Image 1 (cartoon, rainbow, N blue to C red):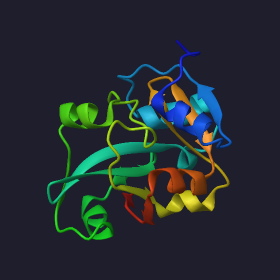
Image 2: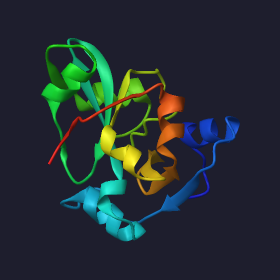
Image 3: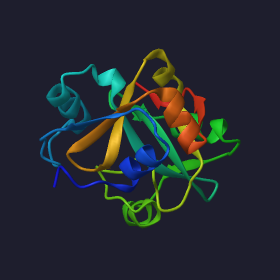
Image 4: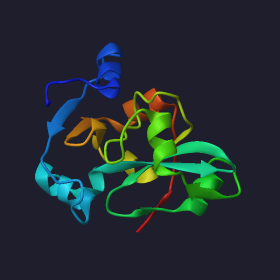
Length: 159
């Protein structure tokens, strides 16, 4: 399973973007999953980001925030010029992105969605995001993530 590519890794390969794949073994039902993934990878949890799908005034939007915090829905709405944001239904998020919960990558989604990357990512030379399935993270430069997702950056994470 670790050798199979994903739409995210295929996109990075096609675009010739420098990246590193990092497999890990953490059970999906583990409490504080993101922190456990960071520990399994041996990296600071502030560098590991999760992708959450939200609905901002009815428009699905991807928020990429550190696993050390939560998504500030109000800040996300402001970042995309909306009024109200809520987390999207799990089934809708999976159907729209083509990925399963716990493995949603901001890259290579079935349908390109507006994306907001938490501004804290720009502090690091590289960040970690899901490679498109549970058990696999990819490491890449924040600038490449921003470019490939046409993301905006804003402070959208709450501690």
